[in-house]
Amino acid sequence: MTNRLAAPGPKRILSLDGGGTRGIVTLAFLEHIEATLQKQLRRDDSFVLSEYFDLIGGTSVGSIIATQLAMGDRVATIRGRFEDWASAIFKPNVFGRLHYKFGAGPLTSKIKTVVQDETLASETLKTGLCIVMKRMDTGSVWPLVNNPHDRYWEARTVAGKNSARRGNKDFKLWELVRSSTAAPTFFSPKRIDVFAGLHDGEFQGTFIDGAVSPYNCPALQLFMLAGIKGYNLGGGDLATGGKSWPLGAHNLLMISVGTGTFGAKVTPGSIAAWDAIQSLQGMIGDGTDLGLTMLQWMSRSRLPWAIDRAVRDLQHDMLHADGSPAVPLLSFQRYDICLEKDDLNPHRKVLDNETELKRLQPLIDVKNMPRLYELAVAAAKTQVSAEDFPAAFNAVAANDVMAA
Image 1 (tube, rainbow, N blue to C red):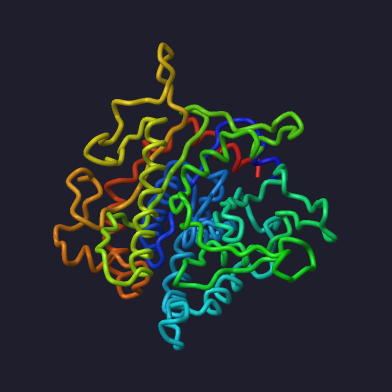
Image 2 (cartoon, one colour):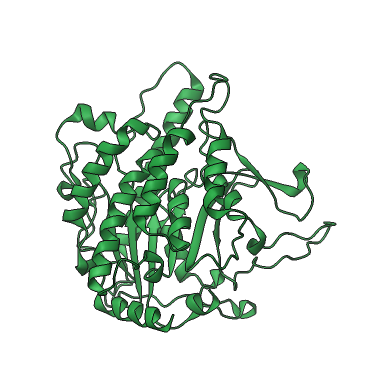
């Protein structure tokens, strides 16, 4: 992993959104991406996305998918598990409304069947993995990466504590994925021992779904991981600031995959908690819009996403200093479908029937999965193109495979 992350040359990132059972949309796009790259690289059915992408990151259900991809699984295998798991994971809690909607036991056990007791340092991870979660008790976002050059990779002593802080490499994969999927009201928070061997509240962190941050769509966070020296994906000397990955359209490729998008419209009610929950859903969408705005502002997308009626898709903008040339900082493409009528994004339109679109929007309706998969498969055929995977990146991928 040290060699792969810190090696010179272009890098490729895959970003996967959260979205509950709508993760089936992501999987439909990933199947088409896998098939496109397999054909482009002239590989057989042993080809997996971990051979191409140097960093795969996800939030919530995206973390479940990202972890399995990083472990070298084919997308069809992951989809089979997801379809098999869904009814058990999203089985309503029998204890009523005052408890979390779903018990965390089935979710944890399903994750463990794949990752078992492996840690973030596990050699079962074939490529870079980022799991995005939110630490509730400190209010901080935790994007944990299997990067041996990370500042917090190794255990370390902390002044005033009688136990060493666990290194990121020692966290179990299952507890990280469980944390990233702990959506408020749906699943209980996950408590993790941040300090080794101590289980009281002072030495534990309380983690919830990474969607409760600007990074339910983790693409912007993953770009920052790549481009900010302090994250040290390039394997530099942290004493002198660290080393980032090189930026530029020929150096950094990012593919972002959604779970179906729509505007979360809030209707004020008479229950304060309900208003808060509805408003939070709207904020999750705001974070996605922010990430797409920034990344499209810094790139040239073949099939850009129209943000709103004011800025549209930013194809006439490029972030740069006055007087300097407008140079893209990355190659970027977003794949997703619209689960509402949106005349600004005709390439993502899947239905005209507003009643059915609304029925497909919930995060946790297992019955919607077959229809969502059908719609996303059709959308992937029109959105995913070999043009989105430039030859410069494909050549590096081929060399990596031969070297392996």
